[in-house]
Length: 99
Image (cartoon, rainbow, N blue to C red):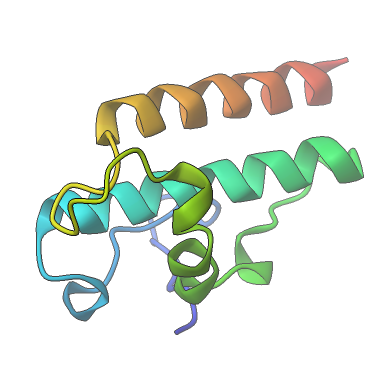
C-alpha cells in the first residue's frame, strides 16, 4: 500500500485508507506510527526533504510491536501517546532543519 499524498500539504501524512484497519482508532494509531517512522528517519539521515514517498502503510503495520502497549487487538497502543511522540519528533526535525 503506497501512501497517497494530500493536496493541501504534500508532506503531511494523509488519513489512512479505510481498509488498513477495522476501526478509526487503529487507523489513527497507524498514522501516528508512520509519522514517527518518517521523523526518526529524517533525524537519523539528517535530511530536511520530504520522506513521505519512501514509506508505506505496510511499514506502519510492521512496526506495531515496537509501539504496542497492550495485548488487546482492538486497543494495542495509546493513540494520544503516539501523537505526542510524533509531534515531539517532528518538532525536532523542524528545529534541526531551521539551523
